[in-house]
Length: 231
Length: 231
DNA sequence: GTTAACAATATTGTTGACAATCACGACCTG
DNA sequence: CAGGTCGTGATTGTCAACAATATTGTTAAC
Image 1 (cartoon, chains in turn yellow, purple, green, brown):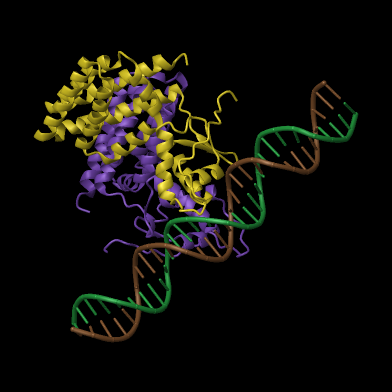
Image 2 (cartoon, each protein chain N blue to C red):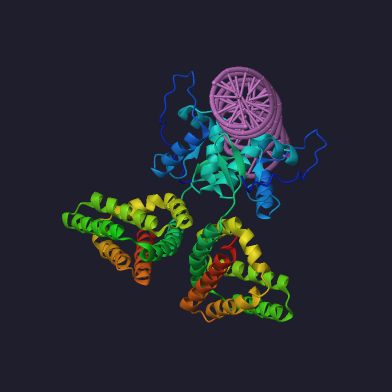
């Protein structure tokens, strides 16, 4: 067994008992948030009756929500044995990062081809803020800039399909992204990579943008691989 | 309205009425097959009660299966208005192909790095068979070789995450792949591309393999774009 | 003839109860 | 004491009835 946290009892919704019910869609959102935010930890069992009680929903709706999360790869289900939060192995986290590399690189290329004047301004601004954040040693500001940058690039690229896929994968690997961001020297290491991506897009050099993005995520993958090898 | 086939009534499973029930998982597989195979056409309405009757399942299970297909992007659901088979626009088909290009290119690169002696034999053999198929004008054999080749490359690459993503996307766009394969000159056009991919992998030249795959799917995307523009 | 209100119908959303299955431990048996 | 077997409790799987909502059809007023 080894790893199987039974975890505490959190009552996100203390129903009076009468039952102001939670809808299936709403429940899906809430459960997804709970998994992605780490409120529900990897390998944690998800007992349908418990969830129903805690979120004030019927078991049927819990079941539907679990079906959703399962096909998003956030939880695992086995026949007659229930569901648990999926634990992503370091190897899989590396694979996910490699796939993201391919996709975000595609997005960076498209973004370079389609970027507008005003978007260039926004990108440059993010670059400046990230640089300042590193100078100040403000990790939170840097992390926020990072998120903002990737999101903006995807938006500029206009690639819906890639965007959804990237999102799905990111949700699965958040834990690793989070841990990586905690490393003290990480911002200084990745800042030039981010600036190179911004330069590539702003100068409308599709190839440069794509390969800069590819390099960036290769570096992330290498870092995960190195950090998690001994865990 | 314009496009909204109400389609005929197919009774895949004429229950005697007593009810040898269909399980939720099984129903999911069957419905997925029906959508991917084109038995259920785009925009066709999927009325829960009808499906339940036709497949000999309870409506609850139908509902769960629909939830699955919905997060796989095979059907669309709107609140209180039901589900219908998702119609992929030509633009989206192009996007899907571009994303597949990025991912299969990644797989080709990894495959070139990891390919074994025996796998090289298999790849070369597929190449020979596809060449002969073109010479004979045997479209079915060529198509089979095509499928086999892409599958083998993904297998050799060992990329689980990419593999699943590619599969999901392919299911969504089968209709376009099918139509493309119908074009009479298509095999002759794509054969050299396929051979280039095989050469790249077999000579363990990762860059060559990756770019050959990228080129191949760019060509597919261009073809879809040209063919479907006027539709 | 067109629009608005309203009734009737079709369809989806939700729920609680029942059935099937599985994990665990007591208990026998050699 | 090893090993099997047979309850028993916990949990998931299934179902059919009920509630809520959207759509369609009808009537009547303007």
